[in-house]
Length: 222
Image 1 (cartoon, helix red, strand yellow):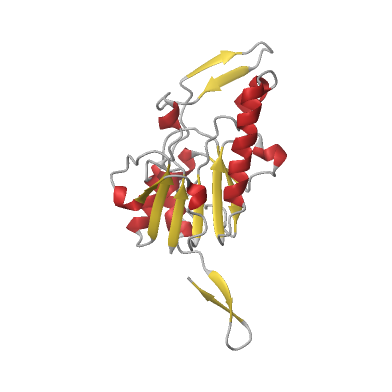
Image 2 (cartoon, helix red, strand yellow):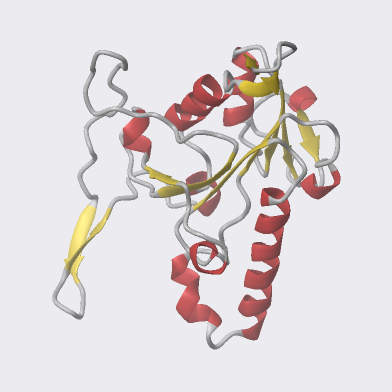
């Protein structure tokens, strides 16, 4: 399967798919930090969309699309413009002529101007003891499966939910908690967690495609 991983310099998802034998490439305007430049396309990902990919997994920048930016945009025309540009970029990825698409972003403006995400997950759902609310918009892909306990069909994927690094009382008297226990660096915080990357590769890398059967019914293939 040919997989394009958009806006990924870490190559976490790319390498997870490569380990399973897929022809995956990361693409970003930055150089890759994953250690495999031969599997990295440096440049504008929009120029790569029409090159016969079977799947697109995108991580468009969320700087101006997050909920945090909403109140800042009200009095800053430059931020408004960048938010519009960010939303347009998101939609160009989502509407690409590629059969299977997954776009990741935090909860934010796209929920209101596009639609609700298909799935909201946390890193600790997939074995990484961290909190970072992550939304997925999907096209021809199933939701990622994760289970709190081992059952008849699935192994447990959840690890213990992390405790907040600190908490405070806001002006309304409500208790708020800060869960970001990893790097405060924006670039580091934007990287996908290993457990989620592995789940994407294992679960989406084997998604079956429905095709017409030569006998007039329906057949399946990978």
